[in-house]
Length: 412
Image 1: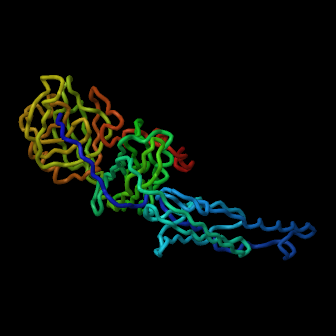
Image 2: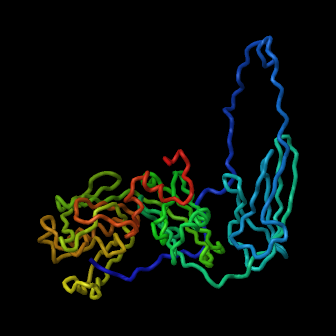
Image 3: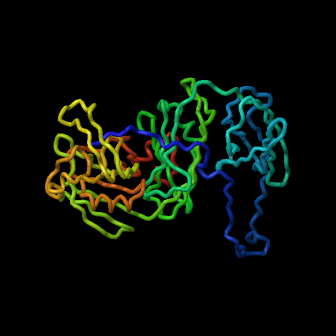
């Protein structure tokens, strides 16, 4: 088992995690036939009077004159008897802020963090079902830049291609307290094209959150992500540090399945078996983890240095080729020319999946970060959060980890 210094792939900028925009609905486009006396009522029946339209009433936030608002502030709306038809936000001295309504109409979300110590004016227009319009304005000032912020990371890069099991992975330091997770989750937006439903799941200590669909992503999917954290006030006195974004692609399906019983890896490309590879897994003292994992990172060459291991028998420094990380604990798929005689026969590794150098090179040239790897039949189960473990749960159990209610049509 190798140990490398863990690094964050931090994407500095912003993106979009739940589709922002006003959803449109349409009728069936056809006119229904009528029967009876031609008046739209059955002969002899008393026409039902049309109820009066509900009067238009709405309010907006922040309140006019509000001070020290977070730069994550949204223009909140509450309305009866109509819909919000336009929102504009301008900064003092000029400059229009872009943004979109949430799908549920509860607020208008700026596309980027607001500026610190700046005054903004929002103008909101609502229209009733009868065509009546009303416009309201509010002006507010944002807070000064906070001194105490959380650390965060987004494990996606712009213009990169990932495997079909790549979860959207966000990391926090320190972890997000349970009472703050719903607030933070509302600011994490994922859009997939073609559209595929998905949900968030928090690891128990709040240091990671994963987003995935019920099934693997469709090959060719584009993921557009915004983790809009900057300025979010948290209960520990800290604030979100930055907005992050990425637009990434999902490539072809490439899957590896490792069976401890047979000591073999079967490799599938677009669901077709393309190679069977002998392996040696972790010996009983240092077993490999059984579970559903993904390739987290790839290194054509590296050094495994375990001299800090409490067990002297597990301390070593070894040069490794074609290493593909599966867990934070140091489990990899890698070339192990010293164990070729054991591969396919017995387990001798420190927890890694040992393969021959030719097979390791072949795999390395084929795989992408986010490709799924399933290991079965070992003495140890994969621990939640030890790697990107989003797929090691059933969908039913995965959605239990959301800090917000999951829509019924997603199986909640």
